[in-house]
Image (cartoon, rainbow, N blue to C red; front, side, top):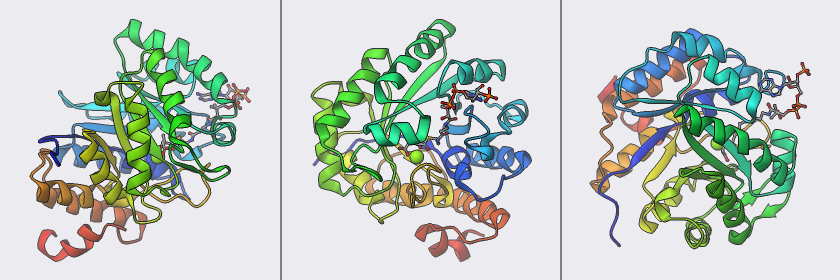
Length: 301
Ligand code: HMG
Ligand code: MG
């Protein structure tokens, strides 16, 4: 099967990773993490979210993070915005790229953003319109794309329906979130195939959590389907606070090691990445979950 020659890797660690830490990681550590990741060659990074600090206190320092970001040309620094209030705050803080997040199931939508799927689409409509007017890039997520912690397995058509709604809103970069990492390659393939019947394949991306150790296999399945946008989290940090039991995204080091082995270009320096994984893990007081970071520790540090 022909694999893409190059992909866009989205680093989710500073947002998806650190939003799930038991404590609030100091803003200066977040900023240094982002800067180190960019130094590794990362060009797309989720830096924080403009959600309610009552819901996710770990991201409550978003203004400080944005103010101190050392922005470099050619790098996309994205923030999550669930509604107009978040969008306006993100813009006031200088955001030029946002992520909006819907869900494939009603139960998860209600638990995560306190509204139905339809209501969330209506909330995103003015956000996308404002972003288009302001020249702000918009990425969409559809969570629980193959499985939901409250409703179980999700049919591919159900995910495709929400993906199409996001696309029709004007969102032309949409990541399929396996929020609780229950997907296996066949399910991921089925979800992608169903979505690609309704939206162009180039629009789709993979955002796979590694709770069941399937995220690399799922990434390979998505690559085989022709998906060229893939999310990962340094040191395997993360999870969603409103998805019980969810662990981090596939570790960026594991993803880059696999992509290097497949001859797929990322422009990312694996050695520096392993150093960064250990650096943030030391700050958090535990080793990275990444197998590659552990295996390469003595060679890289
Ligand atoms: P709500 O309570 O329904 O909102 O929350 P509301 O409009 O009724 O407002 C209630 C209060 O929240 C008000 O304040 C608002 O001002 C405030 P009060 O009057 O009580 O003082 N508020 C806000 N404050 C700051 N920023 C905002 C904002 N909006 C309202 N943007 C809301 C709705 C969406 C805000 C809430 O449910 C929320 O913040 N949820 C956060 C969910 C979240 O961040 N989850 C994790 C990220 S998603 C994820 O990890 C999945 C992903 O990785 C993909 C995958 O893995 O599948 C992306
Ligand atoms: Mg996630």
